[in-house]
Image 1 (cartoon, rainbow, N blue to C red):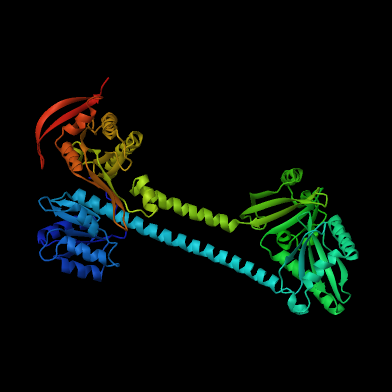
Image 2 (cartoon, rainbow, N blue to C red):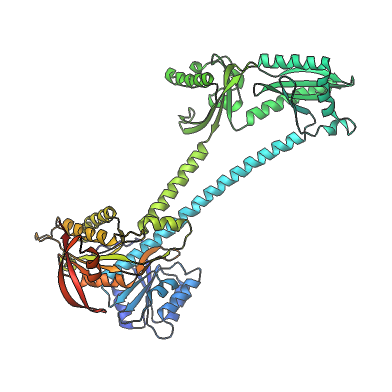
Length: 618
């Protein structure tokens, strides 16, 4: 008997059947496996029990007086609080049972009566496992969604900071220009400058017109050249129309432009206050940007940094880095030389090296951090490289979030691939409803001859190990021959060629699979030395429908007459042989060897001509 994996929390099962004997028989089997069991004699009593205490699974009789099994299932699936409970429908062999309609109404599986306890327990265990796995998947998805929302919140905060900066610029009462080095181009950065001087004074026009006056033009040219020569911001005073005085602060920008900021200095006290405020604001902005910034001269000697970079190298003030080199900051000379080599390469190419991800151990607590680094060459007025600017952004939180999200996504994908074919799982993740029509396929059913009596005295773990070895080989064969395993039930193995990916040679692929299975099973023996044997049945035909059933617990299955016929070929077969229909024979007779069995009576189909598949033709 196969080993049944029963969770430690003892899942509860509701058994619904109008016959006392059946209910008590099922209850006896389930309680012997330590399931908790509730009993209901009809649909109304079942719905009342489910409302009071929802079970983990429902065994539901199809034929009952009053409300039948499908009506009960329909009631359950319409209620959100009970729609996720798996339902196995118990059907008699003579019941007029529409499987497609039953699955549409929400059943997750079905079993024919009278049924074997082993089969029933396997179906129950399988459905409970799928239910628990889906619940785990939902929980993981909720956690992933929470992480995404947290990241969106951080992005919103960043956008808010950018908006505040824009608002700050718009509220400025200073005049801000970007001026080309030769004074031919002047770009105005919009600010609220008019509020300081009144509507009658157009400060922007006055300032731009001053470039046409030779004395003023010469003065500006002199200071701009000095700004580029020094490679830093300089300040000077100038007057317009003899009545409005400004303090100009200009700084090199992009190698051929300066950013020029001018403010009214009519009041010396106001000038002194504004100068102090301006310096403090510039330092505050530099020290509070999220990136770490440093810059070096041509000899790779540090010329400055912001507060964040100073803290990263354990300096108490940014000015402490001035005059030092990488050899002074790093204990490992090889590491220092590596950083210097990167800086030299950027200066030699005179081209930025952006978005280089560096990983290092944080010196304070040993935590691994990720840095997105940019190295940018600094050019003088002649375009010569005079240094390198480094901008580092700590992206540890982003990398950790990405790795966590990727890990959860891979877990979810692996879980889905354990339940569904890969191509079906991919389509399902894209939100597609899976219900496909196939004109023709080839179906194979096989089981192990005398499996139940042979394993009756074996330990459950030994039985499972044996099946796992055999079915693992069959799984590899199905991948090798390009066919799809649909499911296993006990010692039965169900595989199809031609879906979900259609192929013209599906019959040949299944035939090759069957011959390989017969070959591989010969390596296994029973305890007494007898070889294991397979009984294999194959049929080719169509049409069939392949679909994913369920909205909370997915199962891929195939419906069509050819499936039933292949199953009959297996049950009417002979140990150690491959039993096929005439349709399969007609498609393969050119390349495979067959032996005609003759006409046999097939249950539900009447007389049929069948054949034994012997092997490949030489």
